[in-house]
Length: 124
Image (cartoon, rainbow, N blue to C red; front, side, top):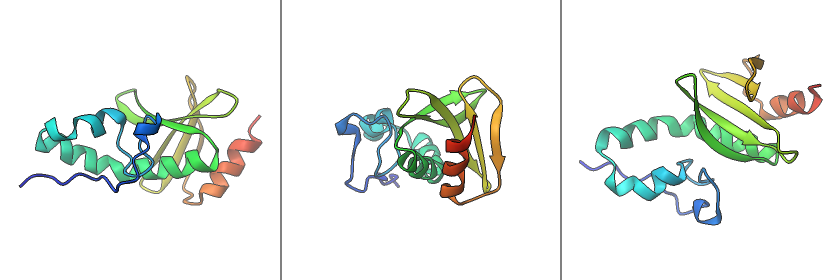
């Protein structure tokens, strides 16, 4: 059985986003979905819930989201208005946030994005 596309017809990759604000797939995943094998499609589906969390945080921070591999793990990279970037993960109810190239600057079991936003804005 073919894996359905996660597309919800709100595609923003056509507008230049690296990660679709509708389905949370990368531009590469959207463009190549029909050619991907079932295992890769299933793996992509598994990563989408976390990416939706990243998209919500990027929206609160007025930043743009990309997906990067760091130390063998997938992270969200949020570029902020001042061109600085944060790496974020949301796994098992814990936010991990770090500035690019640094260790974690926030690791908190907090689902409230407003809390994470306030903490980021108050950081030195």
